Image 1 (cartoon, helix red, strand yellow):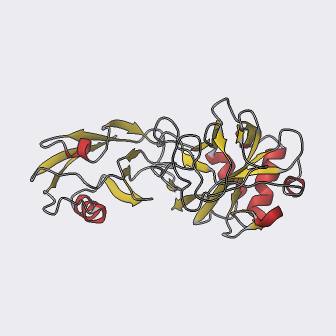
Image 2: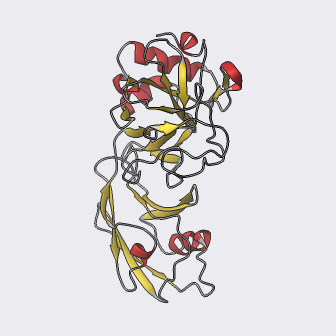
Image 3: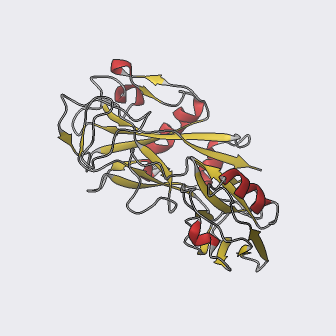
Length: 303
């Protein structure tokens, strides 16, 4: 299927979600959900190549930490470090302060905030690597929304792409079926309103190294630039090297997509870029026209 053909015709483009697989709350986040990471690190390093272990916390900041709360981190090699956290006197937790405190005490992992959500990731990539979180005095991990336990890294980059269930296509501020208001940046319009499900619709995942927009009908855009990376992604899909980059959404309007690290290297024989931008489109079931496009998800490549 030609990419040029995909973006021609009467189109409806709505906000969607592409997330890092295994780090999305259950049920999968919809375009109206906020608790989702928007980027992931891929280590391009010979001895530990791949994606590190990720632990996802909460975006909830109104929690009271017990003064002197502790938790531990343990990596795959068995190195263990303890973190001590202090109470938040004003009853409003500053996530940036928590990140700074944690990162000032550990060397086996890194805390971060992404999309107002607290996370902790390992510093070595690949399926052989892992990061364990162990709650201690005061149970700060539980208060901060972490499940704890051991999470492994990945050799490849795995995505979950997700759309909401049957939803109401309306104007800005209208409520969808689940009763929540449209989030800013996710408003859209449908064919005259009403409910529509994208279950079993075809989808296409796209990769680009260029920030930008590809214009489609009615003022809507695919939120990446058209460049040689996008062209090579389409070629790789055409010869079967990226089999999960095209397919059909399941009955829940979700799909799992894998970017194998071997294909990633083959796409960039002269060296990896610093960032890759991923997005996906959902097509009409009959015509090669776009009905839905997602947000941008960033893969940060660290050598």
